Length: 524
Ligand code: XMP
Image (cartoon, rainbow, N blue to C red; front, side):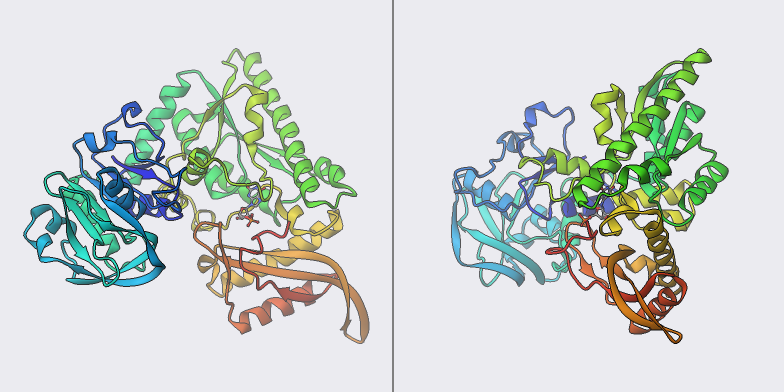
């Protein structure tokens, strides 16, 4: 296992992602992690970049224990500067913050040294790398030597004369560093000699075993299932591990997409055999939402109603278990992914709340259930691969994410049954046309929202005064930032014409051309 210590760079989980692509398991931990408290010994360590300067009074510090492990260490950007700083080198602000491409010249000193040669193996002698830094090493620490430079950074790569300690100023994890992937691969496979045993099929076997260990011979588990890829994969793993002792609950909140419950049932129950209860609580949700227009209030109502319904269903399952003499329900399944784990363990603390996201997290204190999170080590694309290996349809595996509060946050203002019907129908047509045009997989998330403003139009010979549909489609890799998708005009034209013709109550369609930030992906 490779240990990546996160000093707060926006690129830290890209490093993690890249390394896993080589089939090497790695863990990203906050830089505050004490090396002496690790329960495993890393094969190598990577120190990430950081928004800090090593001279900031509150700058995150590297645990010197890293350098006593006797394993290779690679400092990237701030990681290099912090390593230099720790060993007594000099770091200074650059005249101008450097952000952009640079040409890396690998020096003769690297060629004559076995480990540096390994690090730069298969690289051209002048390789394009990506810089993003305000400080740089101006004098390497004693005992280190320079192995590569750029026009602006004479110490773009350094290494310790004896120990396998390396530092690089540029960011190999971003795709703009043309040979960056190769450098990371060389470090991990050649310098650290890490084994390539991280594959999804091995993961399935190990995870099923781990679930069985935790749950035991008789334990019962409940979990909310939404019909999305994460909860479906998690449910399938549970089902493979413990069969019908896993009880899935799908809450129909009345604001799901067209036909969604039926589709989820077909997939999860009919095809995958998961023990699933569909709780139709749509009236309860829609009644609770009556007259509410404030986005946060709508989100809270949906979150709280969800918790109430879920708890009632869970209690019914628990009662049924005890009636048959089975063990009580002791565990709660959650589909937490690795980025959520990283977010919550970041040394900077959780980022500011922009919107209160609705998920089942609120349940745990209430219900005194122990959490099981089979996907907590995985990134989204790994979950998709897992879904594929578990035999799920492409349709489900590649499904765009759908927020817990559903269509309710895509209908601005009050959510009524009539508004839900309009938004649902428009969304269905929109997604259908996107799929027909072969664009679904290029788009990270798309949906149609209903804007409750009215405008004048004409249908046939009649004047109309109707609402608007707002189309949203974004490209993003992490959902933290996003760009609007550049649709071909003919596709937009078809979508617009179909929605205006087929959805009653709508006479205009607009396309949202805002990026995140300053907009968010959802409208509320
Ligand atoms: P925003 O609108 O914050 O959305 O740019 C980022 C991503 O999060 C999804 N989202 C949610 N997912 N519960 C969820 O499970 C929620 O309450 C929620 N709100 C937003 C959104 O669909 C997008 O993918």
